[in-house]
Length: 109
Length: 114
Image (cartoon, each protein chain N blue to C red):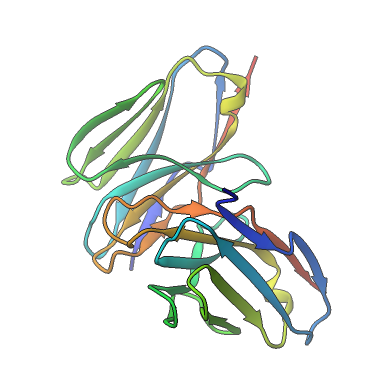
């Protein structure tokens, strides 16, 4: 079967760095997405990786290793507004998204 | 531009009642999707559409029907609601369903079935 694993919850301190991991087993691979979802709101797109390596976008970076079935989202200089759930999703061979359950990130002052 | 909108935002149904959720987009996107989101689980695809007049089943289609009569609208119907359909429903769209296409989500509909 297809499976996406992420930690359920993480806690970090304002101003610090946090890494959210995602491992996957899917039928085919057409890229990996990260979305941010604030409580009670819709998911919004953060990043897309299809080739191995690191993609940097401001305070957020996303890494992919296809051979290991592994990705991480790195958030730097954490701000209170970064408190949210972070969803990992893989596009399979049918171009459908398989979603992880999300990682709830709690930022403490 | 409103982007993706959903109607209604909240709804409480009794078991056996029916209802229709409306998704509307002004982004001129071909692909539209209906997901449900439940605690501790990832988003699960119910049905999707690759263009006006087309629909297809996703991962969890049972108990739901859909229609896409106009490109900008995608309707999700529950004919006979069950408590297991209590969930948050999200509509999403993207331009072509291809690799790398970002999905844009509506604000969600929170449905409770008693």
